[in-house]
Length: 362
Image (cartoon, rainbow, N blue to C red; front, side, top):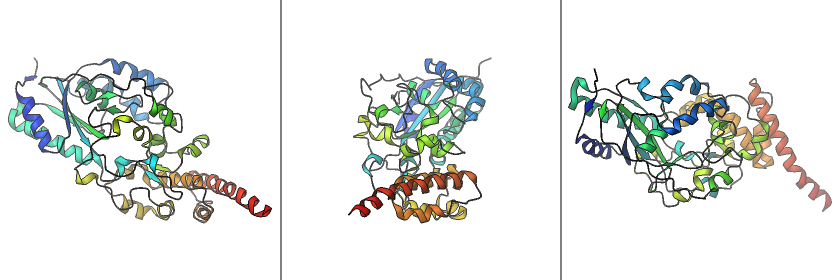
């Protein structure tokens, strides 16, 4: 016996409620199997997930949301813009400063989107009673949210694998509510990337083996956030000043040129979040890290991960005065940090050599 609820006329009320709670995008997709899901197991098999073993464990839920909610009929998808009117990473070239991805300048988006989805869920529970079923996720469960966002009409897949909205660009977060409601569904928009490949060409670590395919092993976001061990040496110099995440492929996207900015106070940059001083970051101990990045996405990297990234960025800074900062980690008890510091110290020594030779010849 089916427990689905045919909810004619409810979609408009839900969209109005979502808008009232600060959602910039709203759409509905069927709880169905889509063509893009066929590519996911092959992507995993190719090793493109890197060390993210949880993606393999969550395969059933990622392939079919009905394994999460057997009576699922519709997936309500919301989008919340986080873009801010501040410089792009491609415009900041100041040695000695690191780069934190735009989405991590403010508070943790998981909490904010969860509150918005909770409001929708509680509204439906109160309005429809015991027959209603729903489960919601904010990048916290086994749901390929971008696939459902596409089929909910929120955007198309860019060649950098990000979802792009014609009006809002790609600077927005996604959350979804899986329900047993039968709602009117939206249609996916056409791919509007055309022949453009700026995102692919701009990636300094060549993380895209083909358009629409991301190799996480080479992605700066993966390297600085998800990877727990040492960063492969051949990828350290291309990482530049990035210490948490990367925005390059979005910074160069033409669809982001006129992207609107957020009105959400939680996404306003915290103090010293935009291009922070690397030496200042390196001076933090674990207690200072926890205090500074409380309720921030940056806490995901943990102190050890951020210090590893900062050391690599210091090595890429080319500033000899950073040798003293790096030297504090040369004999660190953590091998990953000690090795990153030794690499960075050698890089800074090498950067000094041309100056020393020039002075000797003058």
